[in-house]
Amino acid sequence: MENKKCVYEKLIEYKRGTLIEQVHYGLIVHVNKSGIINKIGNDNGYKFYHRSCMKPLQAAMVFDLKLDEKYHFSLEEIALFGASHTGDIIHQEKVLSVLEKIGLKEDDLLCHEHSPLSKKEQIRLLKSNLPERKIHNNCSGKHAAMLTICKNMNYPLSNYKDMNHPLTKLILNRVCELCEINYKDLIVSKDGCGLPVLATPLENLAKGFLNLFTDIKYKKLTDAFLKYPYLIGGEGRLDSEIINFSDNLIAKVGACGLCCVVNLEKNECIVVKIADSNMEARSIAVISALSQLKWLKDESCSRLNKLYTKEILSQDGDILGMISPCFNITKQMF
Image 1 (cartoon, rainbow, N blue to C red):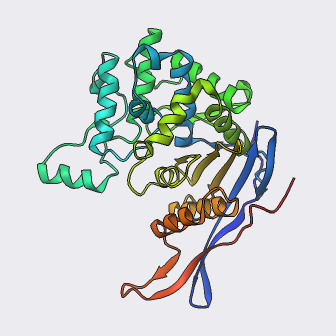
Image 2 (cartoon, one colour):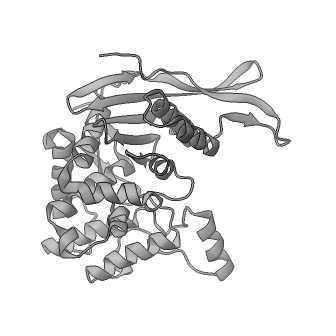
């Protein structure tokens, strides 16, 4: 099935002096379990790859198979299953702890070594002349979860990233169920870390998050996100900061301008997609949407806005302009 052309709407504009010199377009969908409440832009059913927003959905199988109980995983270890972490020492330790519990080693991970996203850890490696490791990979927690499933199912470990591996069909089937989409309608590719990633309309991605995080079966995953937001991402990461500054929000970012936020009190979810994948625009758009929906208290929005400034500054510190959201998610569309 071919993707239809989606119609993006302007979400963010950068104004320097009297002129608008930069704009970012995108889509926002606001969903409950019955369907779309309202939206910004029109995706026309266009399918977007879930990228790292797929991680918690993939982790569902760990709980379906009761592997959290079999291996006595802590909430901190569970948090890494859905994480896009920065590779700090605490992230590394928890991935290694999971591997130890399932009787495997770091070499069994099929994600590649790469520089940690954490500046602090980058400096530590440089000062100590230490190499980059697989556990620095921001997807290493997801890979540890996949190895856990393979070990339990007696699947081959050496090629678990392959499209024709039994793990692939097992995971994709489960994600399809959560996202309420037929397996035959899938568009599948591979993510940057080499594991398969599927594409769905944004509404289905939002439904997947709602079906996952509001199901008592996955309470440990929900609790892990809420209790250990730093493990989900790290310092300055949008999803970690949103969870940290709220009481009932689950957030997860994905590459190419994606972010999903679930309101556990209202049983609603928003998904933001920035067309050009700009991370700053994504952060400002998400925080603005949460503010408009009153999902965050004013104090929390203020603290988040300090992390993702809306001011355009000179090197002298002069305010030259502003970065402004230009959408209204509270306008009823449906």
